[in-house]
Image (cartoon, rainbow, N blue to C red):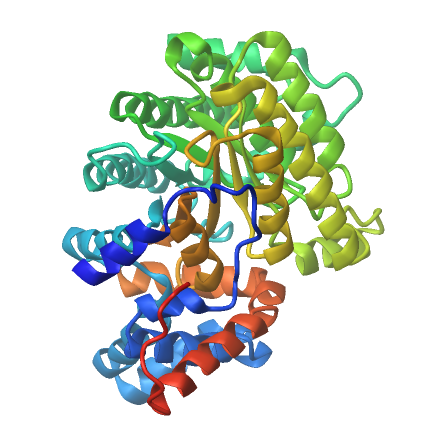
Length: 460
């Protein structure tokens, strides 16, 4: 461990001669044990097999019946759960985070919650209140794991709004705000006032049950942000399907009105933008300009997006225009434009405009690091990087060793809670998993090098 820390210290800091592209050749894999690398290669290869991902939930149930819960659970813990999940207990999560910190990486905790619209148990108010308690505990855990602020001065955590509010109401709100002129009753300012005052909200375009659920949901959101602000934890709101995103953006705008002002030390609430949608660049530009005019801080997590196949299928079934970019190249061009826009904003607004470059794409990471250097954005400034725990370590480790702020998105919880969550995320991210071939090749190279006994690679 001491040797690892010395290596990291010797690698940290920007290159004195100017910007040089980072090498994502797997050289940083020497910091990981052979067992970790072997598991990573096995799991990534399994996850790249479409039938396993598509029928994951059925296969899990079959495994439990055939092998029994204990043996089935042990196999999952040794493979998929162990690769992508921090653990179940606080001690296990703390151990995972400490290991990440020795590698120059930081945690972005995520509560694994999955709403089931057809389930009375997982859509009732009691379920949302239970999720609220879980979110509040996650805030405390995020703070407790990192008593000192990170390279960017930020402790970050993911927030899924549909864990606190029904997707049905989100779809109804989306239909309202999409109408010409929208509804003045649903302005961010009015929702922010209702959250802050706790007074009953009157919305004529919603029925009594919907209004009551909206009020309760606003109260839950307010409590999470209020507690996060007190614990100095910043919340990154997850983006979801296009049928929900306008409603989620409305709620984020309401929270931003209350919590992202300079007097609060904001932004405490960041929004996520999906570059694979055709309208993302214009939406991002409008939101950035609106925040600037209002004098609000503007935090952004920029992703490519995870719901491509589902979005296209819904558009086909409904006979509507496909909201997604036509191909991967167009998505990459969109991501590049959005990244350039946000880095320019960062160079002008500094800490009032923090950005997470959440990408597994090497070209996007190279673009970000080069433009940071060209724009004079320091490594310990308001730009950070994000990847999933258990994936893209050849990029994460290289960034961390070079001194950039890097976060790994980390779910945690019991097998029963997390495995359905992981399988659904894998189904949504099949293109990402299939695209992890380069990481698999690098893992194979490192394992072959060790097995052939060529000695430990010393980084240059």
